[in-house]
Image (cartoon, rainbow, N blue to C red; front, side, top):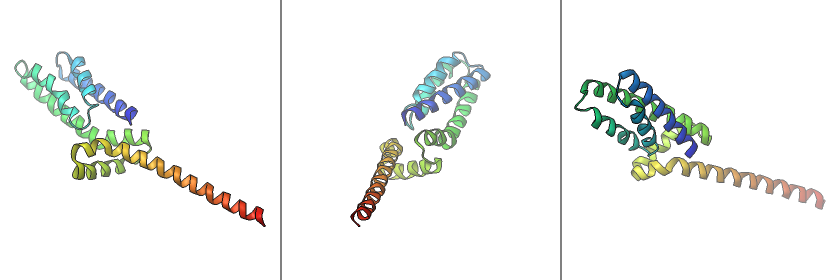
Length: 151
């Protein structure tokens, strides 16, 4: 899970740097790094990542600031709905739609905490069920062999 979220944060940082550079913001690299690191914080991190960029540019260049905020909102929507489920899903071997459903259900039931723990909990439970299933199958095979040997 952590590797998937880290990959996602790096991608967001790179996209932020590209966008901020094209827009012409000063200190684009610093703001992009902060956006990427803040993206590690589930669900509130992207908003936190915008704060330094907004504070630094609100009085000096509000036009570019508006373009940068709109750009990052689009990036965050693409990330939350497409990139994050695919990246984390591929790392954890969980289908992206399953991740989206887990996030929607857990947020409605448990709020932000549910959203944070939903995917790792699901992945752990999935692996435990696979292990128990294999254990059961091995047990059945061993029982059949014991019956054959007893004959």
